[in-house]
Image (spheres, rainbow, N blue to C red):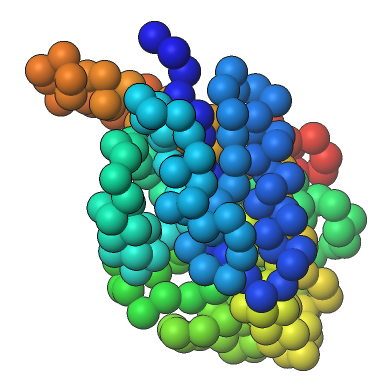
Length: 263
């Protein structure tokens, strides 16, 4: 069977560095995937997802991997709605989060700061969807467990607490050197807002977004492979199970070892 191309479907941003990061991530995934891998965007950036899908030859069934960390509005409604209006069959993969590989990627980014710390704030974009928000809180809990320090999520918009409020809570509990872990794929307005909130409240520093971290590359590949396996199983007349979703939460896969003081 011919390997299908991957469309990495990102939200888009007014910050040009964000789309550049998504294109760089697609290029890295493409080094390990035996078919084209391209980034496309729901808003703000080009190419759009419909235009990208229209460029593939007839008969091609691309796998669309949402470059989204939660299954909130953009993952549940926006992206499926766009795909439903495109006159081409596609295979839609799961969103990227939550996943142990994301925890490993955030640990990698924290280790790049090379700062001592006694607590962590996981800075995130925020969502009004309580189910999606609970997965971010779960990621903060797991990050804190692995680092053996208190860790609270703080949100740039749509939900409480803010990163600054999370820092204040940790300081009130006795923490004195607080770092921010970034639950973001790339820079942009919300990342900048989250960083400013955390630092203004006394955080020592905030890590860079996940960007093109190895763990994120592996996760995109895993989501694509699991979606294809599910489609093939469905076409064979039975439902696909979770076993091949090697990056997904159902597998309980241990994080990839990360070099540095957290490994």
